[in-house]
Length: 224
Image (cartoon, rainbow, N blue to C red; front, side, top):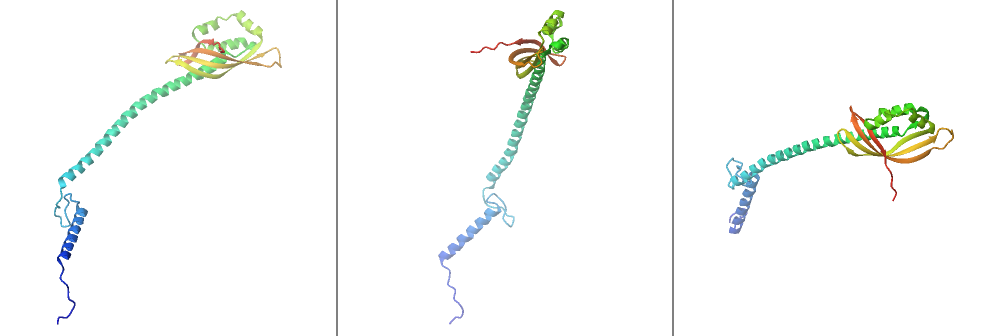
């Protein structure tokens, strides 16, 4: 009689299961080593998959990504260059429009401001901000014209409420403006001033870098 524990022989099914487990383990290790892409095993030997196709695809992806990035960068630079030029032109136009509005506002207010006690000073101020035909007309004002203004004994003050450029080039512009003109009777100290809303169309010309009034017309307001 034999001593010890008897070991039952493995059945064919058990052997098959063990072989299956070994095969599965080997496949898992292959996936860890190279996933069938031709990478070597732990001993440096080449694996058994289909490495050329997968590796070629990966190389192509690595090359395509930088090419796409360069194309996108180039397109962005071109767009930025075009936008920069466009923005510079728009900024220059906006700056010119602002300068015109500022000049027109100040000059229209001056043309609507006059003190009967200082007619000569008022006409001089008008001439300094005008050019062309308007300037010539003011220069031709004689003693009679000045005396007529003084005889009215009025003190007027202009205040531009709103102004906008309706047309402009590099050296010319047309501006429309709404102006509150305050008029006071200079002969009555406690006289209440009257305020009237007027509308003007002004043509300006740039002379030696300065915007001057060439024409100033009162615009009739139609109420419908």
